[in-house]
Length: 81
Image (cartoon, rainbow, N blue to C red; front, side):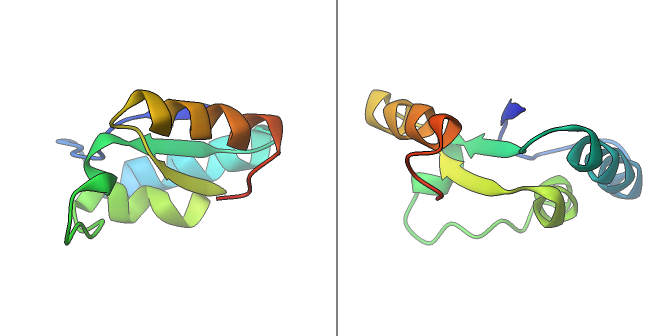
């Protein structure tokens, strides 16, 4: 399962955390691509991102073509991120 999001969830972070745990149990792998991750000084402090990360197997950048190529490698299993 690939999620492309910046993690700026506006809803209940606890609900997101519960649903991410469920998704993690059901999916082979959960890969999250965040376009903000490439920014200098970035930290996953948004409530949604912090709630989701414990259920994410690979957390990668998603801001450029090169980042999406790396995402493809992670999906194929060639890069564990």
